[in-house]
Image 1 (cartoon, rainbow, N blue to C red):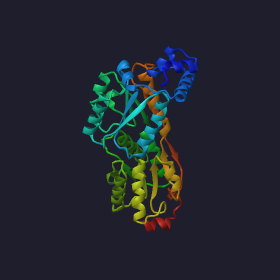
Image 2: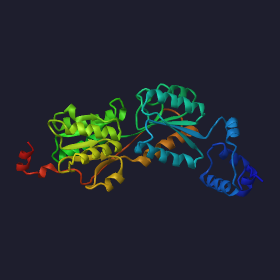
Image 3: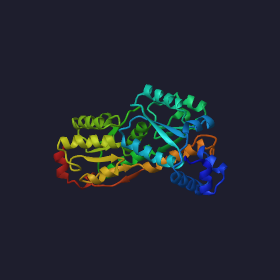
Image 4: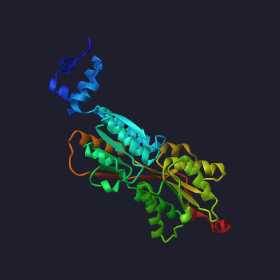
Length: 347
C-alpha cells in the first residue's frame, strides 16, 4: 500500500501540520526536516507534485539562466547552488542562452511558464528588461557574477571584486619587472569584463606605464577566443612579456596557442590564468592564477534566494561582494633578475 502523510507523522512523531508544511515547501526545524526526509526514504513516499503545485501555486523549482553550459565557472556555480537548494526540497531548471540576448529573453519566458518559484541569472545583456515581468509576478531574482545596474537595490546580487582582482594581478606582474603586459577579456559589454579591464588599466596608470590598446584582446570568454587572441598578441611588432587571461576557458586557449608556437612559460612569456586550481596543478610549470570562491558564490546566491522565496527576507535587494585570491605558481618570471646583457638581446 502506498505510504501517506499519516504514515510519515507516525514514523517521525511529528504533527500532520509540520509534515504538510514541509511538503508544501515551508520552513521547518532542521531536526524535523532530517526526520521527515529519513521517513520519506524509508517508506518510499512519493508526492504528487502536479496536484501540490495546483494547491499551493508553487512548483518547488528554481530557474537558472546562464550564457554558456560549457563554461566551467558557470557549471561549478550551478552545482553549488543545486546542492543547497536540494537540501531544502527545490529542483532546478537550467537554460543556456548561447550568449544571445534574444535567447535570454526566451529562456526567461520559458521559465515563467514553468511556474518557477525563483530565478538565478548570469546575464548576457546589460538591461535584461524581461526581468521586469519576473519581478511583477513577485518571483525573487538573484543575479550572479554580473551587475544589472538599473536593478541595483531591487534584486539580490552576488559578485566577486573584479576590479581589485585584476588590479592586484597586474601589480603583481609589475612588481616582478613586467611592463609589457597583455590581457584577455570577455565581451566589453559585460560588466565583469569591464571591471577587470578597468583594474588592468588602473594598475598600469598608477605605475606610470603606458596603456597599449593593442595588448587588450577581447576573447569572448571561450577557448577558441583565448587561442585566437593570443595568436594575435604574438604577432604584435612589440612583443609582450606577460599575459593575463581572465577566465578558465581563455586561459586554456592561451596555453594552446603558446604550446603550439613552442613558446616556453615563463622564460619567454609569463602567464597568469583564472579560476581552475586543477589546471594549475596539472601544468608544468605550475600555473599562477586568480582563484574565485566558487562554492561561496553558489552558496551565497542560493541562500539569498531561499530567504526571498520563503519570505524570511524582504525589502531592498542586497549585494554580496566576495574576494578572490592570487595563488602563486611558477609561471611568472621575475624579470628583475634578468641580466643587463639579456635585456639588451631582447631589444
